[in-house]
Structure formats: C-alpha cells, structure tokens
Amino acid sequence: MASKNLSLLASQGWLSLPQWREVLEEQDHKQAQELAYQTLRTHVGTGIFYRGIVECTNHCIQGCRYCGISANNTELSRYRLDLDTILAVCQEGYQAGIRTFVLQGGEDPAITDAWLTNLIKELRTRFPNNAITLSFGERSRASYQALFDAGASRYLLRHETASPLLYEHLHRPRQRFWHRISCLYALKDIGFQTGCGMMIGVPGQTLDDIAQDMAFIQDFKPHMLGIGPFIPNTHTDLKDAPAGDFTLTLFVMSLCRILFPRILMPATTALRTLLPNGLSQGVLHGCNVVMPSLTPKKEKAKYLLYDKKIQPQESISQTMADFASELASIGHTLTVARGDAPENAPDDTTRQP
Ligand code: SF4
Image (tube, rainbow, N blue to C red; front, side, top):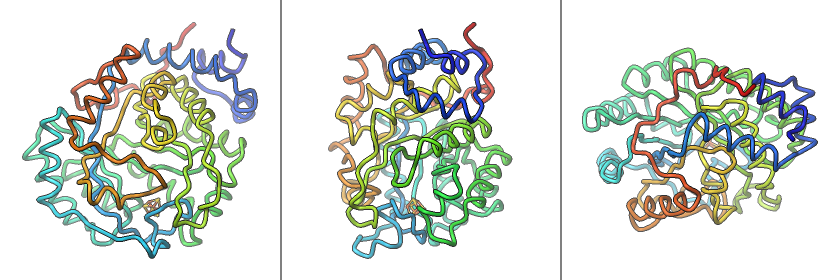
C-alpha cells in the first residue's frame, strides 16, 4: 500500500511543496520504485532509447564549484574537437544505431553560433533522420534561436538547484540563478524539447532543496530530465565532500517517473559510475534513456566532470552490446529511434484511478 502522498502523486499528477517535503522525509523507497516501474511499463514499455554524446570541448569560462572542467581547474589539459573528428565519430555512432546526437561542452567562447550552426547543418545533411540535442550552457536567446533555426531540436540545461541560496553557494557571484532559469524558459518558448535536472547530494543540499527541485520540475514541465548523484572531483574545492547517496538519487528518479509518466529520463553516467549495475537499476526506478559517449578516448579522459567517470569501451558497438546484455537481464531492449518527447509527455494527465 503506497503512502498517502505517493498515491496522490500517482492519481493527480502533482503535489504541494509541503507534500513533496513529506514524501522526501518518508522516503518510501520500495513503494516509489514499484509505482515508478509500473508507470514506466504502462506508459513507455520495455524499449530504452540511446543517444550518442560527443563532448566537443572541455574549455569553460564558468566556475561551478562541483565541476572538474570549470575554469578554476588550472591543471586540466584542454581540448576542442574539430569538425571532421565530430563528423567521424557521429558516423561511427550512426552505424551502431544511434539516432540522436548530443553535442555537449563547457561554456566555451570559441563555440560560436557560426561554428555551431555550421556543424548542425552538416549533421542535418549527412544524417537527416537523426535528432540533434545541444548542451552548451547559458547563451543568449538570439543564440538559442539561431541554433534551433539551424536544425537542433533539443537542449539540455540542468537547472542545478531550484534554491537560489544553494545556487549561490555552488557558483561564482556572476553566475545568476534567475538568468539560468530564464534560459530554460527561453529554450522552451523557442520550441526546443528542453531538459533540466540536478545532482543529488551536492554539499549544502537539504531535503527542502530537493522538494523545491520537485516543485520546480512539476511547474516547468521539462521534456527531459537529467538527475545524478554528486560525485566529487579532485581538482575542485568540493574534493573532500562525500558522494551523493545513490539510493536517494534512485528514489528521486522514481518520483519523477510517477510525476511525468512519459518523460525522457536517462540512467545518467554519474549513476552508472557509482553503481556497477546502474543502468538496470536506473530502468527499474523509471529511467528510459541511456547515453553512451562517442567522444574519442584521448579527449574523453579529459572530460572529467567528476572522479572515476566511466570511460568508454574500445568501440561504440561494444558499449551497445554491454548495455543490451544488462538490459536483457531485466527484460528490456535498446530501441533504434530518435526518441523524441511524446507530444503530451510534459502534460500527460493519464493517471491511474
Ligand atoms: S558545470 Fe558546465 S558551466 Fe559549470 S563549470 Fe562545468 S562545464 Fe562549465
């Protein structure tokens, strides 16, 4: 029997802030997991989408205190992939069945609109069936519009935390909470399928903060959600903080699946880094996406947002085979498809009685 608040969440599709707080306090892991998995099977099925991530640059002008590639890390060797390299790894990914490319990087002034729109157009010409997702942080509305017009259809920008105070604690003074939130609304307004998300267990975070995250997500109605445990990086000033609790991370993922039955939610690399069977555990808690890396091995080792980040297999085909085998053990399969957000994903009101 699910707790009163979990039943309410499943039936009405929203909770008040105090109710979110209570759910997080009660932490009824078993019931949340069962409800989330039942929701996944009913509304999504057994197919798991996969996206190929290309980490285009590890340069970044920002100073997020938790991030291993922030400008504060003076010991990191920096790189930018050139156009030909990106196209070559995308070709390899396409042959392995990847139908969404996720182009990602720090806030790097060299990643200009002209450079990115050229890359997007090139990818659209060569891989017309593929979706292009971008994740290059905060940019101007005009920039987002140009990237959308060039053919990108999705954008990932974690909100990081919905608590302005915690946001301030984790970022440099010039990084403004409200600017980040306004970027998310601009992306959605332009027409991007938009993803937000946060880390669980980042130093200073309380259950009240996570309750605020849930209330924000509920209100914002993203198409995609990226949630992972905090993992410290040796070259940040949070290096001595403990990693986030993966059980709490899985619990929050379950809540998100119950909140948005058809949302696109990856079993994140951070989760898979902390948990050897993180992909299957993520799916059993409501995840329906996995995002293998297409970044060349040499550069991949330099895209260390946190310590011990999983490094890719020798080939994308081998990575896919490993994913398929782990998923088969729980009755799921990889789906070769773009995996766009269902039209009604954010506003899905089909609820259990
Ligand atoms: S989290 Fe993103 S914006 Fe912040 S330092 Fe890292 S790459 Fe830059």
